[in-house]
Figure 1 (cartoon, rainbow, N blue to C red):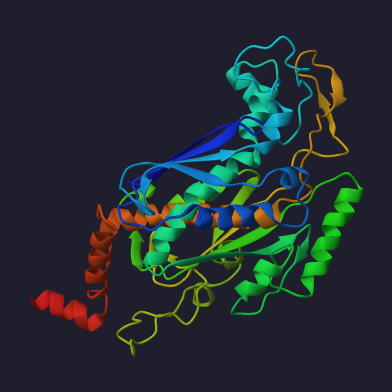
Figure 2: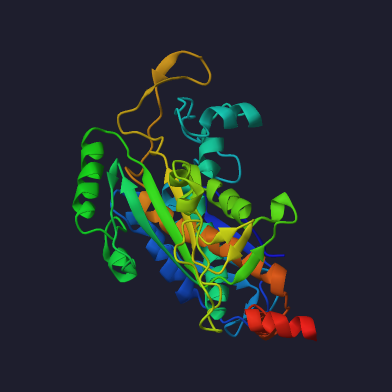
Length: 392
């Protein structure tokens, strides 16, 4: 079982990620993880925090001489901004911890978190509820991504919409162009309009959200299962994506679009097998690469909606946690738009889910054992090979 945990606060000393279940023998280096963390820090509409941090995940355990050991992998990402918060976020009591945050932000974890954990200072909630935690997810996801690369699975993401501006990307998506785009958009015409939507929101003291698509290419038939509800790959992907900050909706393939169509217009026709190396191809991929809770061999396509950030430069009316009186919501340095980096975080979460499902099916305590099991399975998925298996 592949699982991960994160710890740490937004302005605390560091973030920590622990990833357990990675087979031994996987090549991993800090530079590879750093490249994914750097992608997360980019994107038009990011706030001043990204000018302070240079995220780097230092591997503390689970790797020796560049190879995973099979033991838990521990990583630490230092918060450079900690230097400005040593009193407010001190682990030990201090004489002057700073003014308590009591002005609640609509749309954030502030109110519910303060009630649940009995807090009278919202900082005790917002520090952990911050999207800063996603850096640790990306670090863990980078290792899962590295494992999937060994199995021929590649992950990408691009932005479909920001602030009501929708892209119309050409197929196939030019992923190199996406990586060069300030808003991670594959549409030349939509990109400047997305940038303008962000600029307009910033000028108004507001924020904007959008829609992101993550694509995992190369996943084999059969990850996940129809046997139980919590083993369905769709459910596991949706769970992982919905756990991300500000995500309010998830769709696999053309999920929402399909409700307005007839079945003949929705389901992906299976084509005759002409290439034994690539059996069971489809004419379309409207289902987003899953059927019956399992991957079907087509690219896994996940779309999700990111709401506008709750921290506004022009705060909404709100209420004080202590007095109950009307006030302006708390403002703390924040992004105007976090849609572009959400794609990188989404890639990490999908990678973690797919890696877990892959290891669940093929097992292996060492990478080569997993690879052997996978190769043996691939020999059984073609129609002629299935007939041979039955005869044996």
